[in-house]
Length: 249
Image 1: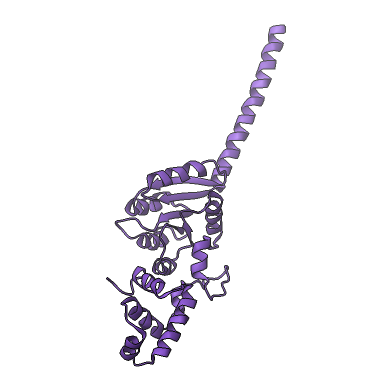
Image 2: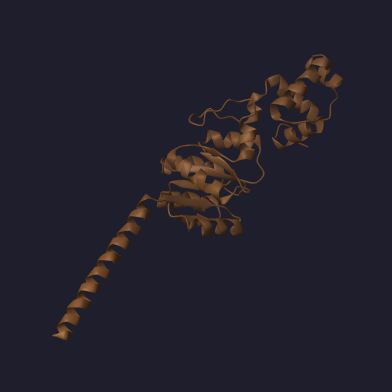
């Protein structure tokens, strides 16, 4: 009798435990189904794996893949259909911008974020043209990266502060619309001509004669360019023009 009670008691406890396991497994499955499927493409192993280790602890973000080159990234987009893709903008090989364009074809619902160290207005411009949902600097906090991933999944663009400052110079930006542009879009064709001449080391009088304007007008253009770009000297102008590819050495 005692054995029977003991057996029944054990059976009852086992059934209850089994039921709890089923509920827990289902809850885990449901959470994974709702989690943001995330892919990272970055050739810097330490940074990539460190970020993956941190995100693995975040319940609503599921790292479904990682790789070190854009070609592998394109393959993973097709196979894994991630919601959000973080791509290092400076990798060699196939262009990261090409990956973004291919992602829109292979999995239109996916959102691409660019991971950047040394950013240029030219890169921002190219990234925006191919439909990027944001730019994150490699000095961004993990909280900022998580916020960017969540915003991208919701269809909202995200820019790290350094990038935001470059984009919104003299712009009124509504984050709910795609009216973003890098600061160099503020320059007029004439200002770009002056910028190129300055980068080549030409004096105001020489620039004026070359462009058929007065030296005073040249100086006014230089002041306007610096104000629009947030630069402070002729040397800054020259460095900017070279980095952005307006002139070559």
